[in-house]
Amino acid sequence: MRVLVVTVVHDPQDARIRYREMRSLLEAGHAVTFAAPFTAYGRTAPDGVRAIDLPRAVGRRRAAALVAARSVLRRERGRHDIVLLHDPELLLTLPTLRGLPPVVWDVHEDTAAAISMKQWVPGPLRRAAAWAVLRAEALAERHVHLVLAEYGYDQRFARRHPVVPNTVPVPDADPPPPGDDRVVYLGRITRQRGGLEMVALAGSLPDGVRLELVGPADPDVRGAVQAAADANLLRWHGFVPNDVALALLQGATAGLSLLHDEPNYAHSRFTKLMEYMANGVPVVTTANPAAAEMVREYDAGLVVPFADAAAVADAVRRLVDDRDLRERLARNGRTAAVAHLDWRVSSVAFVAQLERWASTG
Image (cartoon, rainbow, N blue to C red; front, side):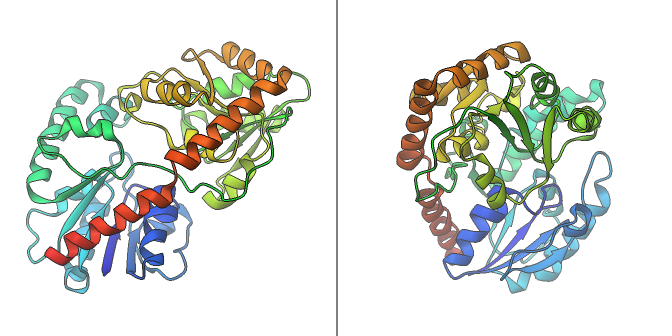
């Protein structure tokens, strides 16, 4: 199977795209072409993948990227058996293209709900933009195949679509037990993901406990994160490739997920929670319904109120002071990840589904 993977929004190092889906396709013996904004993000293509560089769609500057993506789709359509799109914007490139192989849209987020967090969309237009997104989604499911990253996304569509959950690679070897001197956050650092709360937390952790942030920071929080790092209040690793970043988790006291109360997060079991659990790290999460439900179901961490750095500091202090608690939560999370959250199970279903769609044309 020859697969064309396209994004103009996501970092080419996006864990779901590069480290899960594309790696699974390559391991199954399929050929992958990856069209993505490599230069814009300063990234290189994975080994064994044919790369096509695209402009990045960011803010209101999206037209050039979509035009370039449409050109790639037109040029490459006869060379591939299936197309895998990762951005809803790319659906706009399809109506006037003919002769495409089967097209799949991998639905990563609640796009309409996410409009409320898009600062580049003027406030008065957000309601209309969300309505337009819902209409576009309804149109898309009549013309392309859909793969959903969350079971909760199913309610947005008229028909049932296969779900390939955002599960994670679970290490075979048991990780070391959680220590008492390090709290970690893995992922993009934004205001809505608790960036400012983590900066506030850095100055109120118990003595001898440090905060480590692993991931790039958005412009609206970057200055605060850099200032805290310069003051030696926290360690900011910046962008680290996913496989290297995961190794930094092991042995930590807690893994943080401090999402704000945003509609786009309500149905998402954030990947970082599963990564913490898989690597034997207790979770400290805000009370987003899906995240809190998972942590409580598996007894894998502590749930704190939204936007409350003091409550996070108290939760960390509990874990530092109570070795039995943190080791029990870590053990429970690891057991749940092995049994229920391993990407190797999702991988088989994902590859098989693309093979079926490609074979039926």
